[in-house]
Figure 1 (cartoon, helix red, strand yellow):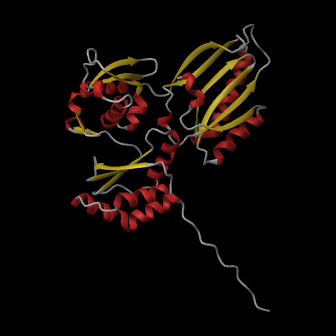
Figure 2 (figure 1 turned 180 degrees about the vertical axis):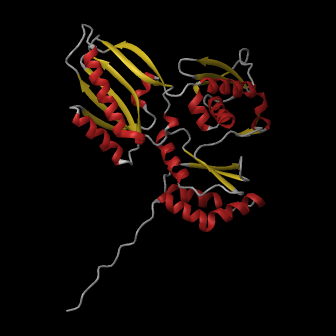
Figure 3 (figure 1 turned 180 degrees about the horizontal axis):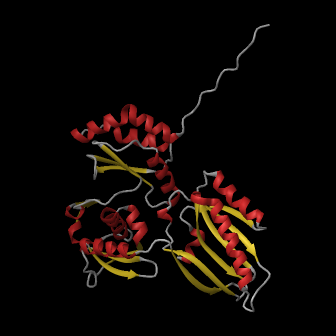
Length: 341
């Protein structure tokens, strides 16, 4: 009797791996030539087709590099879910060289306000842009109002679109996400006297004063009117951890309570010991961002990489051994703890 071998199935490369294989095989050379000659032909379509295999909503751009001659950017355009994918794309990128470097968000562009923006035939001189800056020390961000003389003649949503574009060009996408609170376009520039240089200086001053690993204590009440304490990292920014998209809530209970429902000193020591054990078990795979305590329960809020099952299991195992319960939900952008920021 003859023996029949099962035909091996073809191994399909991960879309990100496939992109970089295409880039090494032909994309890099073709883009280098196009950037030098200005003859792009069908290259934009080819790039969009390659990126669509990773995710159809990713955007891309090329610009002058800071270290290399050219920069290739894959952008999530502010979408936290896509920012994580763009970060994965970047981490698989080849090492930057003399010709190309790579980024997972649009970078600041020097001298951008010397340009003229063509907006549906309207010539917008970006050098006339001015800002009204309102610092928010508690949130460690700036609320920004943007003014341009041409805003009064634009359609309803166009001034805000221009405002977002200009801030991305000045600060970079991640800079806007990290340091800017609210953005509004305004039709009058009486209070908008700050220039782009003033904006950068304000951001740099804020960044220089930011303390890492700082925790703040917040007080409030539960929906039932019971006293609640929240201890939270500040600032609480998902953009500093773009791969950590899985929210895990660990629920601990305590019976020994004070009159206001908060734990007695002995109960608090036990809660802290459990929190330390769970956090140590997670290690560098994730981060504890906040905990809230009220009415006989403490909720710990962790974030980890949803692709890393070991991180999730480490939290579950440590929590289970302490008699705690866990719940997991996908949460790029950290919306579950936004009320603490």
